[in-house]
Image (cartoon, rainbow, N blue to C red):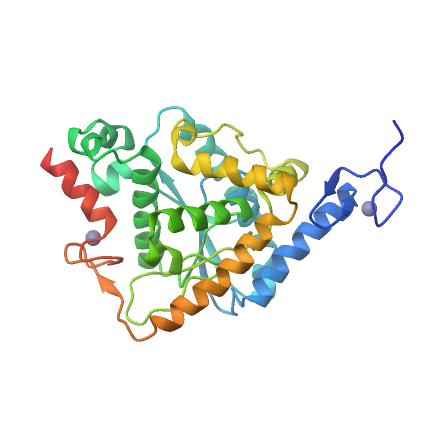
Length: 312
Ligand SMILES: [Zn+2]
Ligand SMILES: [Zn+2]
C-alpha cells in the first residue's frame, strides 16, 4: 500500500481528519491540536492574567492533557494552577488513575490535592450503590458519581481559592452532555454547558471552563499517547452500563456517516443556550436550602442523594 502523505508536508500521515478533509503527520497533528486549544481559550476568553485555576484531574488522558497544556501557558497568562483529584472509591480502577495524576503533577511542578468520597461525604460510591433507597429510585452509578464529583470539585476549588475550574471535557463528552440534558429536559444543566459556564452573581459556583471542548476524543487519546502521558486506558467499570454510553454510540455513528456532526451539535446548541441565558438573565440562582451551595432546585442533587442514603 502506498504511503499516505500529510496534507502539509512529505511525512507519513498518522491521522485522517474527515471533518476537515485533511491528513496529518505526527508533527502537524500535535501542532494542530495545540493550536485548537489555544483558539478555544482565546476566542471564548477562558483565561485572564492573574487567574487562580483549579484543574479537575482524574488521571485519564483528557485531564492529563489539560493539566500539561495549562502548565505550558501558565507563564504567558501569569496564572496559578493546582490540580484536584477525587477518589470515588471504585476498587482497583481508580488506583491506576491516581498514580497517573500524581506522576503528571510531579513532572510539571503542579500542586496536587486528593479528596475522597469517603472523607468528604462519609461514604464510598460502592456503599452508596448498595443502599436500598438508591436502588429503588434507579439512580445509576455514573449519575451518583458525577453529582458527587462535581459537588466536591466545586467546593474544594472554591475553598482553595480558585476563580476558574478546568473540566477536561472533550468534544465527544460535550455532545453527550447536550443530548442528555435535552432528553431529560434539564435546562439548568444545559445552561451550565459550553466552554465557559455563565457568570452568576452571588453564586457559589466556581466558573467552569473547558479548553478541550473542540478536540474529539479520538484525538485527545492519540495526543496523550504521542506525548507519552502514562495514562491508564481502562474504562470505568460502571461506564458501559450508563445512559451516556448509549448516547455515545449514537453520536459516534452519526459522525461516521456525516463527518462534522459533532461540531454542528455544539455550535448549534450554543445558539439555543444563548437564547436561554438571555431569557433567564434576571432570575436569581437557586441556593440549596440544606447545604447552601447553588443548585438547580430547592434542594441540590447532592443533598437529594444524601437524603436518600440517610433514609435507608
Ligand atoms: Zn506534516
Ligand atoms: Zn445541597
